[in-house]
Amino acid sequence: MTRSIRPLVAGNWKMNGLKADLAIAADIAKGYDAELKAAVDLALCPPASLLASASDALRGSHIASGGQDCSTQDLGAFTGEISAAMLADAGASFAIVGHSERRTLHGETDAAVKAKAQAALKAALVPIVCVGETKDEREAGRAVAVVTGQLHGSLPEAATAATLVVAYEPVWAIGTGLTPTAADVAEMHAAIRAELGLLLGDEEAAGVRLLYGGSVKPSNAAELMNVTHVDGALVGGASLKAEDFLAIARACA
Ligand code: PEP
Image 1 (cartoon, rainbow, N blue to C red):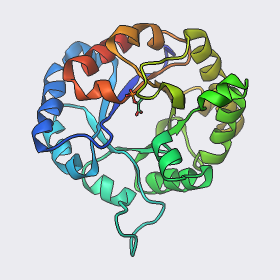
Image 2 (image 1 turned 90 degrees about the horizontal axis):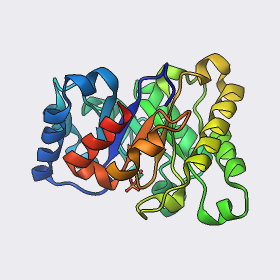
Image 3 (image 1 turned 90 degrees about the vertical axis):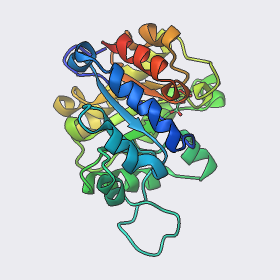
């Protein structure tokens, strides 16, 4: 962790969750006690269909909500897309952009991710910009180069520590149960912080929350969250179980 940075644990529900699953959000809100509130920020990113009702369910809990993606466009003839302003209107404060599932399954380029991050900022949302290497890229010794390259291409203009979150999510660790070693996470997060220094200036870079994501569970959260420059987690599968998500939050506190 970085002592001067308040950690953030964000849950990405992906394409999971029906109305009945708002009970999970309610249970997380119930478990977000005074001790946790004093130590760590929480956010939940449900599917778009549940965003407004999840935001309502979380009202008063101090838990934020977010979208999982947003359009590069403000409005218009873009069937199936959701704009950043729509996410904000549904109660969101964050928008995940550039998740590896979007980059891989929907061919999103760094330029598209950057445009989405800019759209999020324009709607007063904080983009959670995801970056991460594939297994082949890591095995070829190119992990740091790939991730710093993604940062260069994907970060919005004029981001500040208060308006940007970066999530390092090795593609091979997402949903697989595999995680990098603490030393590999430390190396990557230090490289990300240094690269942000070049892009935003050292003062802003020092305050940006750098999340680790990829198979974070209660059993490995303490080790991962203890790594220098890890300021919280982006949690997929484990965010669908209130007890697991809260245990990860406790590991940050
Ligand atoms: C994710 O989808 O952002 C993620 C980190 O998933 P999981 O925790 O399930 O690996």
